[in-house]
Image (cartoon, rainbow, N blue to C red):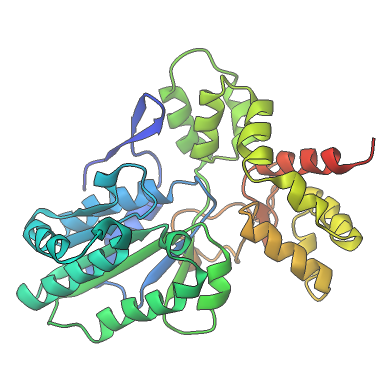
Length: 345
């Protein structure tokens, strides 16, 4: 079994990849057969998709794959594009051919994979793309998906197996890709209670009780890190990271009366969005909540639809319904605060 990568959880705190045992088993099974279609993995912001892709690099390399990993939104340039050792010469060659290659990270990644397919003898190739829909824009989602499918179906050279995984928190692209049969979709949720506990104990210093942290984050590692970096002050996280960071007061202020009524209902039962989807007001609200990464669209808890363990069928405390869920309890709290801010004094 592959070792565990080390990742930065919060400022100055590095941890070993934790939890996700089921996802790692699934990745090992995928490595054994390859992907017939590019796999697109959707999950809440900060749920650990990037960490899983970084771990997937090790799993796939252990199974003999040459891996190309691209993250156009990575803060550090050296993490925007990474390849397995045998592909580094090809990467250097591609980089010399393109002006400003870091502005075309996805193109570089696909060019490296294509050249590897041409030059290597029946290789195993894996392409891992993180946050590319956000970086490229919705108008290019279909083009990218078709390019990835063409690489599988009409490769420039013979290959043994190929794995393509795209991770995204951008939920609107699901509607675009649903028009075609070009990709398969898996959903991913926040970490399990035991998984989050590992990260919680890795954080130094005094901290509130774990149950309080669980009820605030719902298992989301990024929200755990935000609490730590704000001295465990949940109100500051809500105000600075979410209400101000996502301009939620302006979002809520633009809603009409029917949308506001439904939003208040969805605070206690997110599945209210599903029950009223025939209503144009519900459709408009649902699109806005998904666009702002406040609410996640769920699917039945059939294991084949999920990468790793799905959330429970319903958890009112964490804001999880059967069809929709608040990305974290802190996101729900932030919307509640935004509603109070626009109320007349």
